[in-house]
Amino acid sequence: MKTKLFKFFFSLSILVFSAFLPLACLKSSQESTSAATAILENPPQISQTGISDTIAVSVLKNISIKDEERYIRGIHLSSWMSGSGKQNRAVIEMIKKSELNAVVIDLKETDGQICISDIDSVYKGKISYNLIPNLSGFIKELKENNIYIIARIVAFRDNSMPRKDPSLAVKTPSGAIWTDKNRIAWLDPYNPEAWDYILKIAERASELGFDEIQFDYIRFPTDGDLSTARYSNKNHSNSESSKAIVSFLKEANRRLKARGVKISIDTFGLTVTGDDMGIGQKISDMAQWVDFISPMVYPSHYAKGAYGASEPNKAPYRIVYESMKDAVKRIPAEKFRPWLQDFTIFNYKYGKDQVRAQIQACYDNGIGSWLLWNPRCIYTVSALKGPDEENRFVKSRKK
Image (cartoon, rainbow, N blue to C red; front, side, top):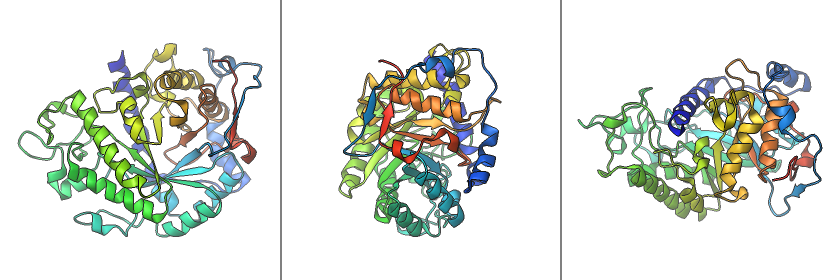
């Protein structure tokens, strides 16, 4: 069952994370915001156990309020979105009017391109593109509005640097650059020089003023002809891959913590079950070296039958609730800040009820922080509460 769920989850991850990156847009006014999110609203009625009967009818007076630090509640912004001054202003206004208080900005994507132009010294050959020409100004404005800023850096899936410097690449038995099923190259997660390349980008992000570095694709490849993938560690195995990822994070912790930035990681949703799935993501070992773990618990990414749901995409509360219930059995709730689904796929529309159900599922597991993902950066504003709810949440069920 875990193998089946993993294959389904991975296939959907590739689809959602790569489909619409260049199309980012956001509407700033109330009228245009409604138009932008209208297609996500009013989902068809569903007969299975779902939102209406999984959230308890009477809300318990079990309120959690965070005093020392804020809960982090944010949205993903592509580099294209972040490079638009008009869209930047719209984002800030939306955040100011809601419980949101954070943004996750793409600085390095799966194609390996780096989205800022002033770090040429960290790599051999031109890989950076000035997609965010006024990044320093955007960061300044975000900070002025007390918005927490996270730099998303895709770690080992990288279709640029391995081609510039094949010594850093996963290889084939003949010594050629190995690629996955989409013909994307990978940096070798065992190679300390590959680590150094990634961490120099992270260090530059810290210098630019980011509060946190978020590593995505912090894992080994999962598709393509894995039997022909060759690494610098000749003893590659599941246990060795887990050790390599932990060693990378330990080095990231050493280098980045001295700079005063936090560290987070994105993981497959199924890693919360305690299985590293053969990709090096053993979160119980990774947790020691990071501040936050963000499992991608998108309901659409789970196979039929997951957690007893015949159609997981239509059971947002159940999937997120059960996933995070598994998670907090292993690691304290304060470590988790899951990615939640705010996009429509498989002809089932996600809108206010579906997004809010996932948020409530986090709260019911004692998790107060979360992030919303939409590949086009169009978010369901109606699912968000006001700014006075930023540091609190209410549980709807007993544990």
